[in-house]
Image 1: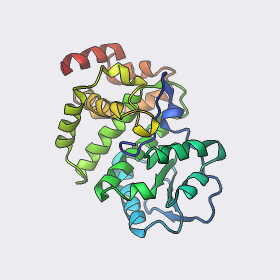
Image 2: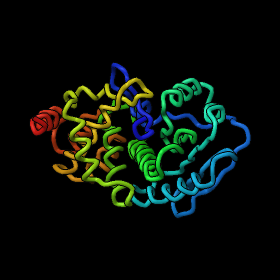
Image 3: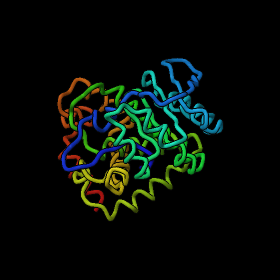
Length: 274
C-alpha cells in the first residue's frame, strides 16, 4: 500500500470496522517472541518471529514510542512483525488468511486495526529507514482513529480515513525529521490536479493492493490539509473521531466537528482547487 496502510475499495462506502480494522487477532503461527515497548500508558508489545532483523525491531520500538507521544495513547497494541509470508499469513485468524495473502502479493507491507498493527518484513525492510518510520506513524494513527471512534458502524469515506492518516504521518514525521512537510504538501497538490472530485473518493482510490492507485490518499491528504487550515488541527486529529463514538452518521459527526456540512465542504474544497 502507499504507506503500507490497510484500506478498502469497492462500490460502496465502508464501515469503520472495514476501514479502520476489523483486523483479526493473531492465530497460531509457530514460535514467536514478545518484545515490550518501554513507556508509560497502555502496553505495547512487538510480536515477531526469530528471523526478524534486530535493527528493524529497534526502529519499530523507537517509532512506536514517538507515535504514542505525538498522537496519544490508543490503548494496548500488539505489533505483529514476520519475516516470511508463511508466518505472516498463519498469524492471522483462518477467516482472514486469504486476504492477508492477497495483500502481501499485491505489495502491501503494513496494515492496522483495533489494537493491532501488522508488518510484513521482506517488503517493509526494502524501504529507507525514514520511510519505514512514516509507515508506522500512519498505521499508529489508524489505531488512534479506531480507539476514539469505538466500534462505530457508521460508513466512512476512504479519503477521510486514509487522507487524515497520511496527513498526520507527514506532519508528525516532519517534526521528527523523517520528511519535509512543505515538499510533501506540494507533491500531493501537484498529483491531485489530475484527480476527480473529492466525493468520488469516498469509495474509490484505494491502495494498489486493494485494487486502486492510491488516489484517495493523495487527494485525501490535500483535503485534510485544507480542513486543518480552515477548521483547526484538533477537529481532524481527535474531535471527528471522538464524535463517531456517539453519532450514528459520519456526516453528522463531520458537521459537528468542522462546523460545516459535508456537501458544503465539498463545494468549498472544489472551488479552491479550480
